[in-house]
Length: 200
Image (cartoon, rainbow, N blue to C red; front, side):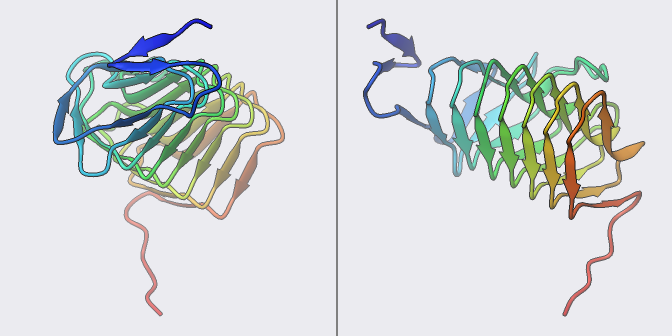
């Protein structure tokens, strides 16, 4: 058995998933490569100023409740600096994460089955809010994206699900799907300005 050491964690195959609890303010970039790591971020703020603020580079990582402020300045549409970057992150989960002041909120590459749920993000206008590339069966659910070029951009990711999202003040499209098939797009709301909320 080969142990994996990351930020003081020793993960051995067959043991319970390691847990990383973030507290207070944390300086990025932060790179995590322990499979099945659980990151509890409620109340914590990760601040990035170059490259991706948080990179997840192993299968099964879960991040919950984290607030990410900033990332590097690169706003290229296809390769932007992101608050959170997933690569080789099969089955990973981002849940109830908040993002501010980053070119892209989440950039997902080569991460089949990755799920983004309950994301709240405000963008800088030049990049996608969530960019999903070459990640079949990814999910973007119940998220609120505001102020990006495209709210959600999907490419070469068959079987992706885009459900129950609120997409506001995005410069071009709420969602944009290319070279993908069997994509489920259901129950989303996209408005050029702010969507009117109906109170009952």
